[in-house]
Length: 458
Image (cartoon, rainbow, N blue to C red; front, side, top):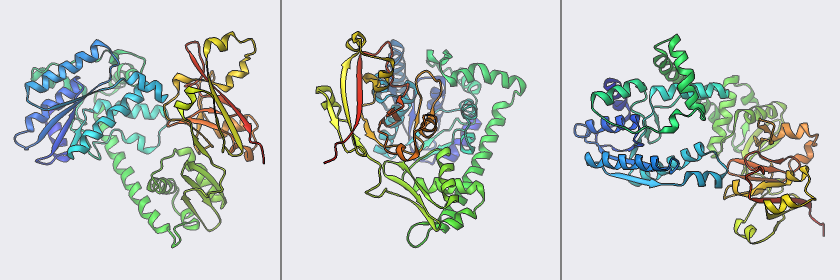
């Protein structure tokens, strides 16, 4: 294992580097920490450690923190600990606990790295890489998803990325290193755990060198993807006209594999990010030579027979967005206008009082949300390309475009539909109802009710 880790570290580190080790206390992070400490003197590394206590496992979370503190103190390595109530934060943001934990963790790492211009060492292994590839395969990823976990991304480095989990545990035994076990790693509640515990053992029985082969595959695909992105950036530069728009004819002459990447690079240059389905929608409009689509609150795509561009929308475009003042809402009913000729009335009520009302019909719940499952930062806005909604009980998430088509909503009326959204997308859509992550259920205690009406004309 050490030989593999040394080779990776030589590519990812330089002498005199500052390195902060993301240290959970698990076997992978213990080995990463110990391995980098063995290089500390020879490579003149300045090493520190970061530990986030997610407060998700009660006494077990505190046990992990105590272990990490003792491990670092014994080796005289400075440690920064941050504590977060991830469960509460996930509810506030309307996210899964897994996603929220990741966001909080990486925000912590980024803040500490920026303070000292340090690199952050993460303990991902070849086993994690294989799991990631299989997860992306199940989700239907494009090429970049099959590239696995990158050894280096910005200031993040992964010296153990070529080492398997078995090799990591062998290293622990050989160096008499102890570690702590996260009890949730044995739960089949998470997709990654099911792949680790059920799927990978079956695949490794077919090919004992599976992890090595997947490492080789993801490395080769990463080179291909990087080269295609390089060609896309070159092609993008050649399409730009003096007026800043892109030449439509030149774009259509590009090979198909480059067209989508050119659009992705263009949107990235505007600090945007969208999915493959939206890219295909944009390509269709370019081929047709006309059309426009809202990509984000501040990004609008438009095309004609000569060229196309992605820029802030025109002032008279229908898109709208108004923030929801949570403090004012909790103090009483609020009314928000300026929503493409409509006004929304929002008010809170207790679930008990609503349940006792004889007037409530099932269809009325289409205008109700579980207030405690809504993120802190929400707004009423128009439709954005790629918006999706999971209607409760259907077991799937669909684009608003498909849902509007199923509901026979005319194209001309779709842009004016009012949407309540947070950072992760729609929570409620006028005419369609709530997303399952904010829908009222038997555990709901506080209900947000929304009513949309046409504004009175002067």
